[in-house]
Length: 134
Image 1 (cartoon, helix red, strand yellow):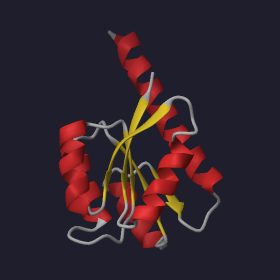
Image 2 (image 1 turned 30 degrees about the vertical axis):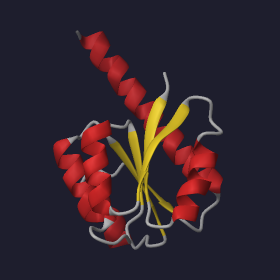
Image 3 (image 1 turned 180 degrees about the vertical axis):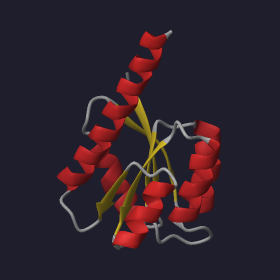
């Protein structure tokens, strides 16, 4: 099954790079991009992607506020934060509101790839377990 991913970051070049990286995986497709948190919330509601890669420092609405809104309305949409800011208190707050993984932008692209893979695998297992329970 093709996983649909939304990228939310205010830097166009980073979005382009992430799209190329993610779409190098045969089972992943970037369904759209958002350049701020408000746009991410709107596109999450419209597109219902499987996963969102979310920056924290964005204009209009920051990524943490956007993640909070998306998690509250669409808990089935997994969120992976991809940010320069990885203070322990920030990571804890992100996890409390439903962020599944936190990857620093300075980390290797392989770290982000592995985080996305792990989150999508967890989602697939949860769907299978729910199907088995019925």
